[in-house]
Image (cartoon, rainbow, N blue to C red; front, side):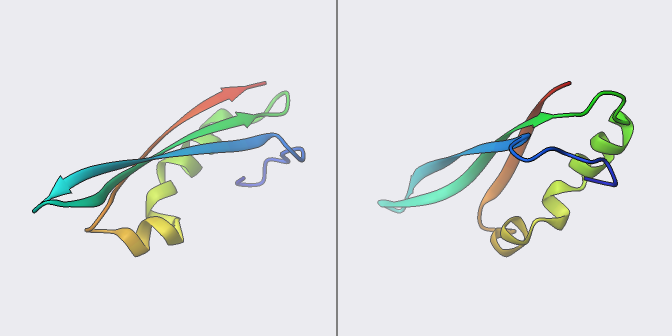
Length: 79
């Protein structure tokens, strides 16, 4: 992540879909991703925040769903 060495298993994520009924059809309208990131001691938090800020713009899945499904996220970080 932006030149910060992250240990194996130090990044995890869960995703939750939001379904709504549109014209009597159940449609996926949103996806929320919750990241868990274990940062090494002394990691540059500013670099991590910048990487996360560009998440949706650089995520292939989010770009594929753009305009049809709203993608949101949050992150929980620990050292």
